[in-house]
Image (cartoon, rainbow, N blue to C red; front, side, top):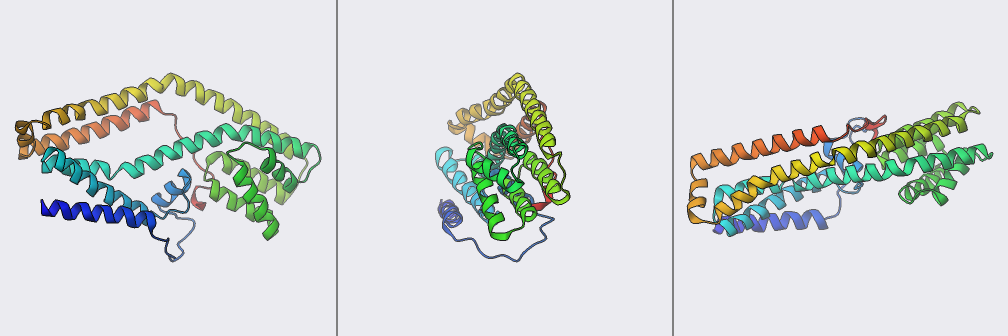
Length: 288
């Protein structure tokens, strides 16, 4: 019991440290090879959170969950399994936030591109057209375009400002749009308005298709969640009895728990993979 209390204290301290400590200055790494955790944080909309904080929070949540489950069920094996599962919660949350953010941006880009095309067609310069989106564009994109316009005003380098905006947005559609604007700015040409209108039409068609397919396949996601949760609800009911807890603390019980966890994880991921559309690859994926 003393060991578990110490583990709980360590977990609480790690979570508190991850949430309250100031980010430390780190040695600059190769911007072309960001870590997976860094990319995930950028794409989920948390660029100010370091990968170290994510790891510390995961470890702290795992320790805390293991302690709570052990107190409730008095079973070390179930407590350890719950701790391992809970340590994955931050990454799962970030992946969910990444999908939600990409969905929100995907719905906003057609309107933003049409505004850009209309402003360019009306005779505005490219920086002025970007300012139109910053003022009258979709709510999800206004902060990014305001930062882009401010960056351009300070640096005077529109191409560099577009590249930095792509890093902040961390979105596949944003990569395509901003690369198109960068090329148009560098080489010039009078076809930018037509290219943007074509791109807007393509984005609207892609969005409509995705919505239709996701609506048809939503039952697969619901079935996956129900199938993954049902065995563990039964486990909680069985572990509420002393005989059940004793059985799971044996070697055979540990094998059953680990095998069930692996089977649940593999089956859940496979069902999600079958019911989810593939994510569009990023053109500027290494720039994060």
